[in-house]
Amino acid sequence: MAEAVYAAFEVPNVVTGVVIALLVGLIILGGISRIASFTEKIVPIMAGFYILGALAIIVMHADMILPAFEMIFVGAFNPKAATGGVIGVGLKESLRYGIARGVFSNEAGMGSTPHAHAVAKVKHPAEQGLVSIMGVVIDTGIVCTLTALVILTTNALPTGLFGAQLTQEGFTIGFGNFGTTFIAICLFFFSLSTIIGWYYFAEANVKYLAGKKGVPVFRLFVLICIVFGTTMSAEIVWELADVFNGLMIIPNLIALLGLSSLVIKVANDYEGPFLHHKASQYENKRIR
Image (cartoon, rainbow, N blue to C red):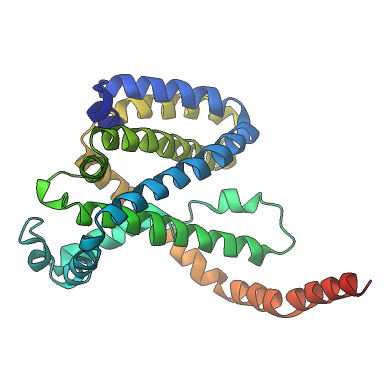
């Protein structure tokens, strides 16, 4: 986010970090209700704008859509052939980074979002499970695919840029200078909502481990990390994210295996008695 803001407005990274820390501080002091109120309004709006912007660029470069998909499928098994050696990685590295970025995008299997799903008010737990699955579909299946197509159809990949700057270059080629600003604004709100969401998850853990007395210290630690994080290189941030994501996945997968029989039981109950009862209620109301 800091790099994208700097590319668009030449604001020093540390200044962006301080501003974000102040905004996050104001929001998290309001508790879960303010966190939920902020994210439920900002995220859908920004996601909608981003999807429309990406679709517009892809349509503008419609003649490159088929070659882009060809690069994707060829690149999955032979990255050097797909990119002309630009990336310089083999199949092993392609799989490693593909899985890591996929996990970073949708967090499926990481155990990072049960805190949010657990407080949802639904008539059956399986309903919230389906909502969780849709998050993966929208995030990775739609948003990330559109991002990849923007980069490939605009031929931004050979520029050698990395991370947000690469996406920014694709949108700049498509929209001109406005593309740089567009991505900076989108990333600003996406990142802000992500920081706030992850803070809430972490706070729940801190309360469980250290009680409420540990929350103020943790809040200060988070705000310092936000500022410090904007001064680090994107490569180091990605490596740290991969390490800590991996550390989260290991215990969570063990827990998922242990709970698999319960999940099957809940799913069968939802698909059988629960839906049948719901359908019967609807039919009775219709007859009345």
